[in-house]
Image (tube, rainbow, N blue to C red; front, side, top):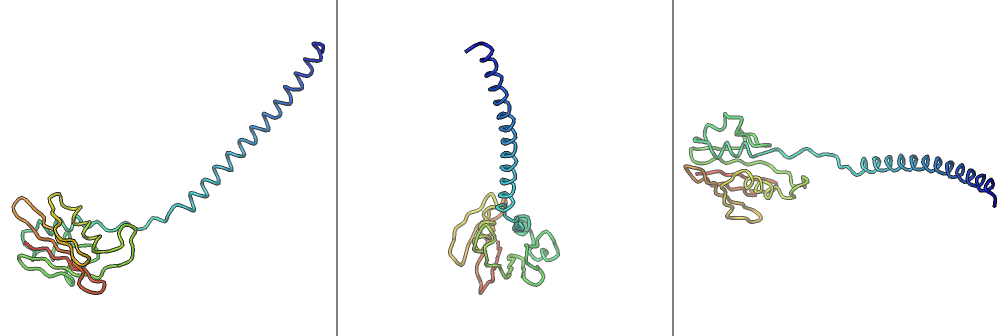
Length: 168
C-alpha cells in the first residue's frame, strides 16, 4: 500500500472517529441528563414528608423540677408541658406537681408508646438522673440537683391518659 493510500485511509478513519466521538459526546451528555433527571425524580418520590417534630419538653420539665414552689407554676408559662393545660390538667401543692393529659397512641416516627416517649424525654433532659422503675405502665426517675432529690413518675392512668407526678 502506498503512502498516499495510507494517508487517505488514515484521514477517513480520523473523520469517522471524530464523528463517533461527537456522537459519543452527545450520547454521554444525553445519558447524563437522563440520569440526573431520574435521580431527581426518585429523590422526590422517596423523600418523606417532614412531620412536625415532637415538642421539646426539656425546658418545661427542667423549670418544674427546679421550682422552689410548685404552687406558683400555674402562672409561669415556662412550666407549661406541651399538650397540657396547666390550669385544667395539673394540680400543685408545696411538695408535688401532678399533671394528667390524653396521649396520642399512634407512632410519631420515634417511639410507638407515649409512656416510653415521655420516659425517654425525662432521661434525656437531666444529667443527674436515675431511672429505677421501668414497667409497661409506670416509669420512675430520681433527679439529683445540688440541694435536693426530686422524684419524677410517669404512668398510664387509664385509656389514653398519662400522668406525670413530680415530688420532693
